Amino acid sequence: MTTPASGGPTVRRILVGAQLRRLREAAGISREEAGYRIRGSESKISRMELGRVGFKDRDIVDLLEYYGVEDPEQRKILITMAKEANTPGWWHDYDDVLPGWFQTYVGLEEAASLIRTYEVQFVPGLLQTDDYARAVTLSGAPEASSEDVDRRVQLRMERQRLLTREKPLRLWAVVDEAALRRPMGGTKVMRGQIKALLEVSDMPNVTIQIMPFRFGGHAADGGPFSILRFAEPDLPDIVYLELMVSALYLEKREHVDRYTQTMDRLTVDSPPPEVTRETLRKILTQI
Image (cartoon, rainbow, N blue to C red; front, side, top):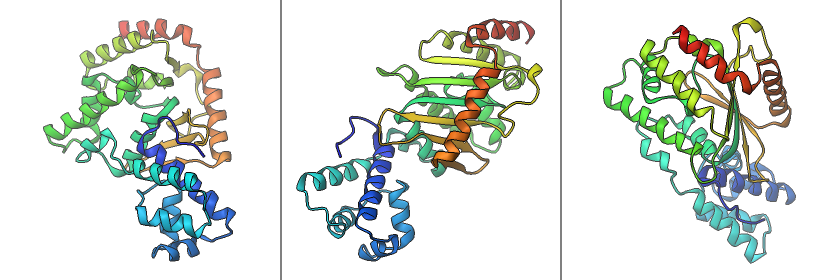
């Protein structure tokens, strides 16, 4: 096991958890037995192995001893990674407006090398303008204070730096035509958003396709989703499904494969990226 070159605390938690699970299984120890060893429970071990919680140094040391890990270098690497996994990410500055279930996504998004996403109702968050993001925020939380709205919009704008960093995120978005014709925030806001999509579609790391009304029913009738892929080889693809007050993170191979097949179908059924700019210009003239 080697220390990954990048990834951030969320990915490091997942990697440490996966390694702890492999060591426990290799030692033939149950989650219940491991939990008892660290004065915890089976559910605590499960959360640790899934990377859902931070790690205490004492717990890591006790588990490595219990699992029979004697190699000093292996122990050092895992303990170091566990400490680094506890370091707060930049997004924790927005804890006041960032739900816990979404913090995990922001951390994974930060570490992803490729995100493939399908959106039905809204322009993908990483492609939203400030005004459009504000309109979306107000529609979902009309009771939010102006300060909270400002903070949420600022967070969304901060996330967009992923597209322009030194090693930029690759984003492939299939956007339903409905999201581009729904007058979110009014005519001026939508015109600004469409113009922004025209600009960003020129970026080499961004691909946009538009699923037209005329296609009718299609492979993703179940709703929006995102598939995140990582450069770190030990980290599998993850499917993200956002709900109203929570989210699902699917990691089982059969689930990921199903969504990957659906995304592949969407990219085939939608007009190719080469015609996206023409479609956007047409929509712009009709707003």
